[in-house]
Amino acid sequence: MPRRRAVPPLGLVLTLVLGLTACGGGGGHGGPGAAGVGDPYFPRSGNGGYDVTHYGLTLAWEPRGNRLTGTAEITARAGQDLDAFHLDLLGMDVTDVTVQGRRARWSRSGQELTVRPRDGLPEGRTFRTAVRYAGSPRTITDPDGSEEGWLPTADGALGLGEPTGSMAWFPGDHHPADKAAYDVRITVPEGLTAVSNGELTSTTTVNGRTTYVWHTAEPMASYVATLAIGRYTVTRSATRRGLPVYTAVDPTEAKDAGKVLAGLPGIVDWEEDTFGPYPFSSTGAIVDRPGDAGYALETQNRPVFPGAPDTGTLVHELAHQWFGDSVTPKSWRDMWLNEGFATYAEWLWQEEHGGDTADEIFRALYRGDYREPADNAQVWAFPPADPPDAAHISDPPVYYRGAMVLHTIRELVGDAAFRRIVRGWAARYRHRNADTADFTAYVEKAAPDRDFGPVWDDWLHGAGRPRRP
Image (cartoon, rainbow, N blue to C red; front, side):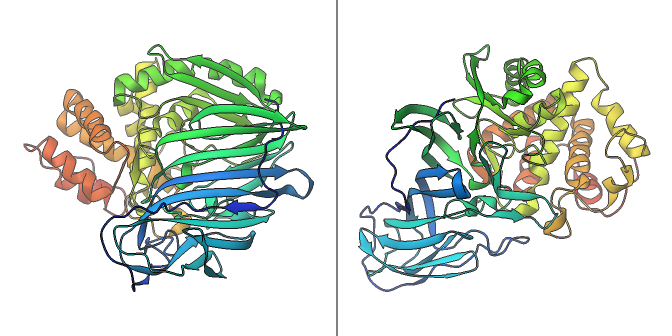
């Protein structure tokens, strides 16, 4: 899609609109919000003391120097009396910060941008902050060695955020426990396309630059926010139920990707039949070149793929729209609730489309002769609900043994009850956060006549390979 010139300023004015509404409390004196939420694997991620409800990002990208500038607005509510609060931002140059339109003091240390407004923010009040910044965003190397944040590509750039990369291109409360709505206005050179989450509401070209405006109404965790800039072939279609489908494919991948993406509407229809109503206002995909990112990612509304995906990967990432994007983990310890469900979705798809049954896959994994992962012994390295550290939250036990937990539940309760549990879980926590304790409590309440103790003790939390009953 062509880009045209928009009107964003040449400096990235991140106006964190933590919008001021009179809501309780008097003014005055409070303490600083925490510099992190105490996540067991990423303790500095996120921030305490407030809850974001909306991000408004106005961005401009220049290929020369890979330079990003713009304005972002965030709306949030104080959860305590605040005389200071933190934002996560790694890299970039901050030039100015205001709170409620008045210049505020600020300082930086690592990923922490500490803001001290002139007036205290009482508990219960929403407040507005503006941060101006610009620079070349960083590529971040994760504890497991993968790269995220801002990835330069052959013809543009790609913003990816799991688990912490979004702080490379906009400041905010970057932990999955704080979800918000988004508006992203991005200006790029004409001839390029800029794709983000949600719905494309306008495209305007002025003086050789194109501005794309994207709106995400449903709550979104920052780690599934994305911004893809490049030369894409855009296709629009719809599912059987009328859900809009928007795909953006690098022309070098168009032939192979087109064959797989033609099946995307049918996959979403099947997943709605299996998991319940689709949780967002549109779906789709972004396909870049294989070298642009080293992995597929379940970015909200339209997952990102490094090259044309196979059908199983497409099923997996679309299933994340329910499990991970809508029902979002409270902490990174709960990743198995994302990956176990998405992996089991692949098994169910195979079972219902002429492939191996879920039980055959389960038994092959248990024996150690399934075709993936390459080393089946990795499945038993640690319990899916208890990764040993941040470097292992995306390891095989989280995916495969997480799916095996779901299969053991299915064996215990039967197919009909299992389908009710899966659909009910997606409905109960739709657009909310949940953790492992929430899931086990939900399952036990849904099937009170079953004993889930061995499932939780042996398959979810137990070390090593459990004995089959």
